[in-house]
Length: 312
Image 1: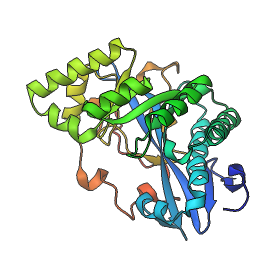
Image 2 (image 1 turned 60 degrees about the vertical axis):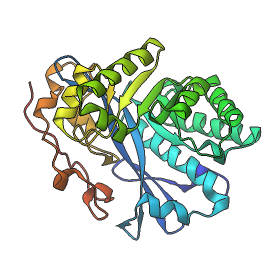
Image 3 (image 1 turned 45 degrees about the horizontal axis):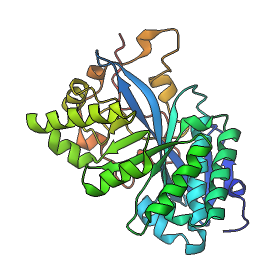
């Protein structure tokens, strides 16, 4: 990767979005909302998750196909580049409060100098995007070879500068409980398939309610992701799950997205602009599941939405 500056690979497009280049690839941000919902089922965007969408010669390339093609010596820089891209595209939405969740692979930053350099890069990108550190949520992806000392050091360095911490794929097994104690996160993302299995019966739902309440008492907000139909969303409201994510609520959209139109910020003057979940279309695999060549991954597709139109 030529040069050492992540910023040299960024480009501001005519539509206001940011893209980045790596060799023959162009990297795009897709943002997927993370919602809260009130007791009436009205949705409010609390955060976005940044998802990378590569293309080559204008054709979509799945992330699982792109990342193995990144040269080993470029892995850390590409990891940084993806995060910077998500920060810039979230900042470009000019929302006042929405946070950004973005993945980290701590094993790419092993030495003190590596960790310090990466945290400084995030600070710089956050400042350039007009955001504040408390709106950046670092979602720690745990790998088998990541040591507890290294993870703890990385988390301490991030917290020192005001960034928030999340752990993903939480399933309450022994390893997950160890991660919880080690990182003391602000957010916990429950493992999607595990949650969906538990939502299917009353005993499982009761356990989830207890876990959500227990974590909340520790100051940790839970996120149920991968929600695929309205029934699951309704159950989550009854369980008082703080944050929700999934195709039943909103699909990822390539930046610049239409989310400001679809879900204006709650401090906007018209409360009626918030949408009840009952008005969202029911889950339809033919409509919602991503395919390799769908508009979800296309750099020219904009403003597509799977939302209903009726407002209260």
